Length: 185
Length: 407
Image (cartoon, rainbow over all chains, first blue to last red; front, side, top):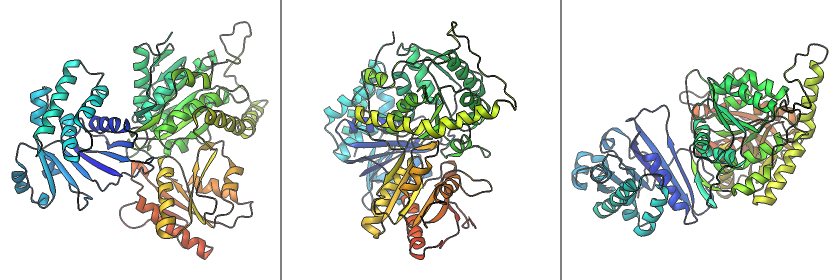
């Protein structure tokens, strides 16, 4: 079982990102689950979303999770949300920030000694899609760090997931995914 | 003629999308609805299908849930296939009209996305609304996953519209835990799905002007009791065989097998929990781990049909266990939990001497963790060994602060 927790602000697309990832993974024959904690959250409120991936049918519906990957798509959540909650020894963090990994760890010491990768999904999405929707670039970064799928396969499937959007936006998302894949460190 | 949608064999859908797609596939004549979290995406999705030409029927936006169900009743009496969706307070507002729908013997399918009932206001999942509808005369199915929310819609239409049944049916799914959780759903093609349910065959429809009928009559002491008795007779005798037949047909069609009582690892189980919704699947996973990691022969009974209550099947499924935990996801407000009481009623006149205890859990969406279930199975094992309760009869699970228990 592979488990992923997203930290996001409501409106940044973590739920769409989690469901999109689940959709892509499902095409490979694996079983998937994607969900989120909502409550009556307003846009901008801190929230979490989740993915489970397994070779057999996923029966576990508990919300509790000790994640293998933690994806943070809003830079400030590193300081105000409990992003290390229920972590495992080998939990991998991929964090959206304008800082280098070293600078980030210096600013948030509880990340020291952990496997931390950084990428500026906010800037990438602003420069490609035209607004700060950091969900798809984060998936590009996840593909690089996890080695889950080849980029061509992933992009091909993401085009299908995003098919209801205008072609221009789909193209911009593909550039964003590739940039995050190339830029994550 | 509505356009069809080419679905992939497995679509990644949440429970709401699964229900919405099922409503599209059976080509409902009238959906009348008023939105409420977490069921809104069902009717929102359906309205989208309608707007984009995938549905021929009518979509009516009403002023309230009371209006929505009233509209459904009118449309069903007129002679159409009818459905809606709601949750929580919306279901509460419908309650008066629910009794009208069942008393008038109108087939209507209601997707009830289970949510807590306030105060305090809470949009998350528990079974308070499902329990509120217990005595309303509706058939109640329970889904544990998006796949089941999809499949049970087809079953519900088929059973509800059967001329020997003619009773409305609710398909329950857990708010958020199913309704907003995306998982792989094995789909049926539009044609196969529609043909499973078939064309709607009206009976006593008001638009059949050659055969005038009256709906919604007043009966006092002279006939009211007989009408209610006929309703009960249909629920107690006709419905479960029709559900079983629909389950059998559906298995032939899809390969997916549903049972009126879902038994898991019960053949040699010493202890068992009885529960509904997503908890059933989590409990199955934990029951497996209790055997491999804790040496406790644990089983799970999932309630698939909450109304009519399958008393004999439940009693048979539990006859050999030594300890049972009834898991209620609703505040019993001054009594033992409803499942505890139903199980007591089902087992009291049988040979079983099983110890029965009650757990209240998960109110307002509070997580039921695997660790909680390990604790419950462990307590049940102690009850089985002692042949009497070793804990209070009713305990609150996952509650913050001091432990709360009664009796």
